[in-house]
Length: 153
Ligand code: HEC
Image (cartoon, rainbow, N blue to C red; front, side):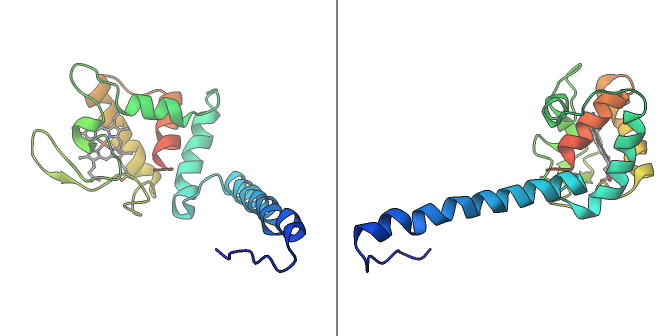
């Protein structure tokens, strides 16, 4: 960061850098927000398949998807099981199957770009993992909430 020089005394300090900096930061934030809204995801690689699925589930009459609900469901325990049993609380971390001990690569696209890139793979594992974890299939709403949260990790 440049340190303002006071060549013209107090007047410059009042009307110079500090005043100019924040509108610029505001513009950058606005541009970022706009591009996130347009692309639907900060992870370009995940935008296609995840958006396809979210659209499918939306067409089944869900309400707005919520990353907050997705995150809560991720760590909700049912009969001593949760998504974290295998994937750990942090989806950026590598997990481990509690029964077989088999390593599971991180689920977060930021840590593992191969994740959430294939709709069949996502559907297959959500079906299997929801059944194992919750004892039933996840609803369209729950799957949308989970992916909305997970894609941003
Ligand atoms: C019993 C262990 C286990 C539990 C519990 C579990 N998973 Fe998984 N999950 C796996 C394994 C194993 C894979 C596939 C192996 C791999 O791809 O590394 C996987 C893969 C996935 C994938 C596929 C991602 C991709 O694109 O490759 C998603 C999404 C996923 N899990 C979400 C969840 C969610 C959400 C929950 C909680 C409802 C959950 N998992 C609970 C073991 C588990």
